[in-house]
Picture 1 (cartoon, one colour):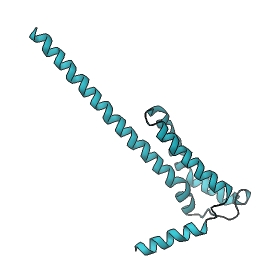
Picture 2: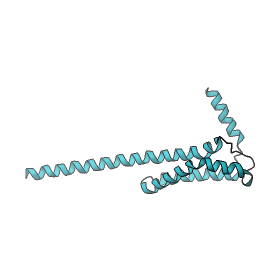
Picture 3: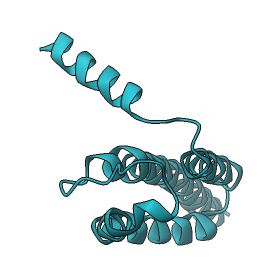
Picture 4: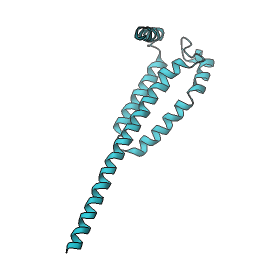
Amino acid sequence: MFSLASEQFLGFIHAVDWTEQWILALIAAEVLLLVLVLATRRHTTPQALLFILLGLVIYLARHINSFCERNWRMFSNQNYFDPQGLFISVMLSGPLLIINAIIVVNHLIVLCGLMVKVKRAELKAKARERSKKKN
């Protein structure tokens, strides 16, 4: 089973012309998005906006695939866009889903940090209240 999956993966890798400008641009854009997400890890608002934007692109991937399937000659040397959407899923939706998962994990980390801050503030307030009652 593993050998079949690795054969299919290698077949995909060999079928793609990795020198095409639009494929390189797509990969560069995804790397740039990842760097942007990592650079803004302490700023949840831009990350939330990125999360929504990337989710919208993922949601529209089927329509993007259909458009590219009809117009691939304008930007590509071969038609990568099958009706099932395998190529668009591997090259666009998959990486964007991974980036969105990183955003979710980051938001959970930030949320845990906020919960710790709130609990500390609560404990300090209770301690001040107790010390006032003693005095």
